[in-house]
Structures are given as C-alpha cells and as structure tokens.
Image 1 (spheres, helix red, strand yellow):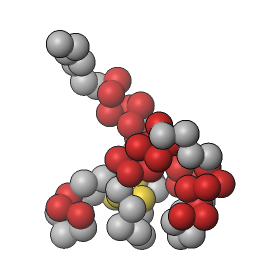
Image 2 (cartoon, one colour):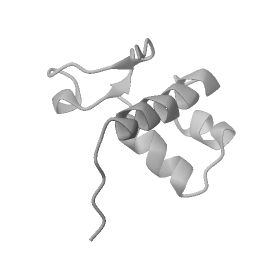
Image 3 (cartoon, rainbow, N blue to C red):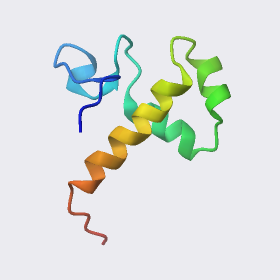
Image 4 (cartoon, one colour):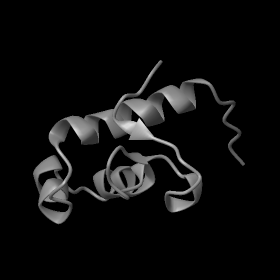
Length: 73
C-alpha cells in the first residue's frame, strides 16, 4: 500500500519514517498514542500535524506489521 503522508528519506531523521513535510517520526506519534494522548493533544504538541497525518501513521504501522513475522520472547 502506498502511504502518501509518510516519507522515508535518509537525509531526514536518519531515514526513519516521518510525517511528510515534517521531522515528526511515525514512531513518536505511535508512542504518544500508546501513552494515551488524544489526537487533539498530539496536534497541540505538533501543530504542523493533522488528524489525517496521525491516522496515516497508524495505517503505515499496521501495514508494516502485516508484512512482518513477530516473535515474542
């Protein structure tokens, strides 16, 4: 699946997936959601983000995990 709102560029954040046009890593958005932050709070902390950007980060992570073999130890 193509993720228009997500960018991977070796020159930005060492190639980690970020929200396109920002330096906000997908990982950070997911951690904030996991910590219980609301979409509104995340947007307040990162004003360049939109609710669609946050949903795009979730969709990117879901697609990434769907293609991975997860091993629990």
